[in-house]
Length: 402
Ligand SMILES: *Cc1c(COP(=O)(O)O)cnc(C)c1O
Image 1 (tube, rainbow, N blue to C red):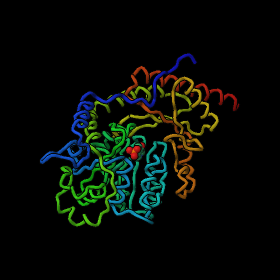
Image 2 (cartoon, helix red, strand yellow):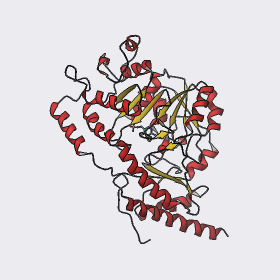
Image 3 (cartoon, protein in one colour):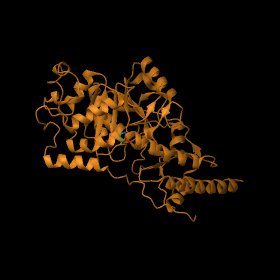
Image 4 (spheres, protein in one colour):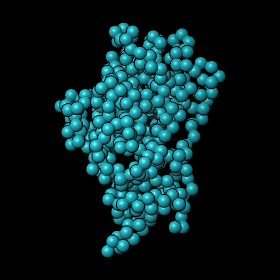
């Protein structure tokens, strides 16, 4: 192959100057702790919470230390604990089953379809066994949320949404994360706004937010939560709720606020790159594009495609050949987990049964990140490299079969 890509798949774009200025101001003040506030001062964390709640039009928002922490806090706030079962996606990232295990509960994995969303038939079949579904909008793919809500309602299931990959996305005209009882977001470096580590938890339920706030470690200073509920919601639970420290600090909040202001601009850029890849890979023999439903207003911060029913050997060749042309594909079908590509059967602390349909999808699933440091020209080149590699291997394997 003559063309080679020289970009870096883990290089994010730098933070905006205004974020750096605000961070410097916080550092100079020395007041980094969220409750270290002057009289009547809202502070960076409180302001971030207010701004995010306003952005997606929810009543309450709590900023915490990580996305994973939002998930375990959400479970605790709903009273999930030892011995409970929690439904979740077989196709997700390790912190999701990790959060479930951290409260002593057991994940029950629900299959994934070729569209990379939760399998509703499997969900219905397993929904008798649990009261909570922690739904991961994994890699930004959003299932039919109307159908999902009706399944949850008829089975008495409370929904927690893991929106680590859907901040800024919508189903129809509803922001991702506002359909469930609780919405959880990550602000870790590889997500849509970047504070290194961080998370945002949202809900419209005042009692759940009071509980989440106490859990996050509020030292009875809950009156310093401008995006929290009225005092009376804390009174009932304040002595009974343990402090499981996981707050956000002003430094992180200060760099997130300007990024939130630019979020939809960033979303437009991601989608432009995504659509170049999608177009470039269409009509590639042996390759399945993941078609996105009309109601889904996605954020194309990563790209997936399927090589369904290819052998492991062939897929390894695809990954290797793309890599030698500078394109880093992650393969979810690999027998042992590498980086973020772990799968339901790699979490050995959970007992699982094999899921044939899900295994077929994961075996052929390839993934690449689209950092905003990439240009449109980069994405045209990446698509053509993948297309050439896949097409060549598909043709040779077909002729050798004859
Ligand atoms: C990143 C991620 C999380 C957890 O976020 P952290 O901030 O890294 O704890 C949860 N779910 C998914 C799908 C993720 O990608």
